[in-house]
Image (cartoon, rainbow, N blue to C red; front, side, top):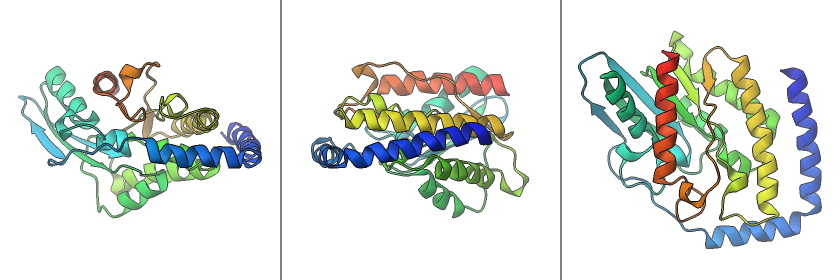
Length: 248
């Protein structure tokens, strides 16, 4: 892990150097992007639900940034957590109790602060989607890795052993709304942080990484060209549910 991480750190330092060289252009594109990107709301209903079943109770907690918060989705039951709960309820006939604890704009550090406020996590399965805002903020891979490890340790404190399933980073380098060369920069940083995420997950016994990443295509994005569409949520939740069943 140390050798692989060191290689990523060197590439990150090189990336920072190149970003400094082209900073004026990238900064102007970033300002323009903030002005023109459509602002989509998050669901306003209760971020939890119960799906009745004839077998055991199964608790799901969804945590993270905007994809988990359901930006652009009208109801929490139609978000990633709600849909994954529905798939498991239909497939396993479990009574599934689900809850969303996510906010638009969170970084991994913000997420850890939010989780630190909770006394415990009563969940059999914890779904995590994080990293897009860390790409936007150009979070250093060494900081990202340290915070990922801290996040997992928070989730398993008090001796709890939930299944923790991380999703890959959002495909920031393919967001239709972002122009080049800014998209290339974010795509490079996405690759660095995604590689670091894989390294951390492979070194931890308490967490797993979803392998599936979704292809290009405007149908996988909301109108803002940033957030996942309903089709993306459908495919994503199906993969989360099937992976959970394989892990059980």
